[in-house]
Image (cartoon, rainbow, N blue to C red; front, side, top):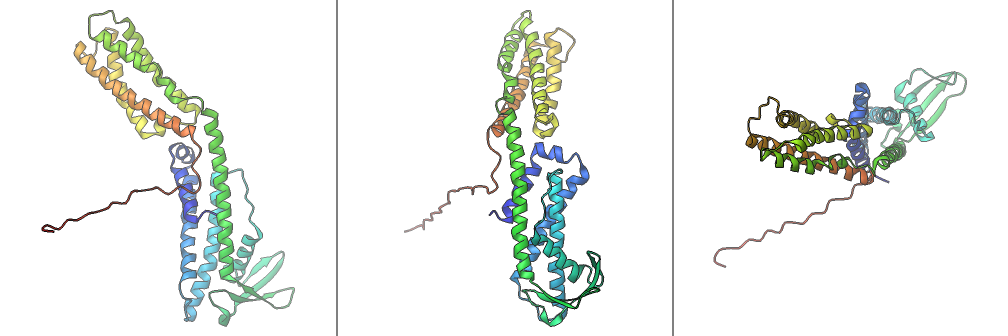
Length: 334
């Protein structure tokens, strides 16, 4: 079973991925709710570590604080877990098991609504038996309106262990669902390469360079600048089909902005219109700059293609290997 840390890292990486982030952040409240839920799930896990790892206090008030805190923390984690599931899978319902229901009922009776709890039409009031409190749990004395007095033991340590296991199970189920969606999305476009939009770019620049170095008719360079523009449009359309946009990636958006002016001026120049470009030498400078930008775009398209060719990241990430650095010292005179 993956650890909480591993599951959390996967979910956070998924949410911050450029394509997923653009889709999820479209609903601003849902976006913030998602990360608030993730924070609470992790924070509660840390709080439960503190409960289990530290010595149970001898002071009566401190004991109550520990019990109140542990039971309330379990309840908070459940609410956050359910909201997180809905954020990622709006139409999917992961039903809580009896374990989670038992935790909620124990919390409601002991620290949630102990003085007045209505359950299945029956009112009851409850109290923690003071001298029963320890790290393992406590006894709860209940007075229902229709039955005799009830004593029950609330096994806090056991409930923590069971809820932790259930939380890991649910988060794993959420991630597996996201991985299935991601794999289906990648498979849909795996054989359609974004880099294909730039197939004729090299040939187009070849013709631009040829016709700007001499006094030619600039027939092919007119075609070439049009082809460059067409490549940009084809790339943008291909991104849109994948649920992406030019501004999904800051790096791609930046290159598109940098391309616009030199491409517009070079188009005017080869069309013999008024332009900032006043000579063939200046045109070559503009063309060389454009060629560099297009190479960067083609490289970024290739990186996205590689991502689509691969499987979604596993839940448990492989540890990165490293070569230890060996420091050798020599003492002068030895």
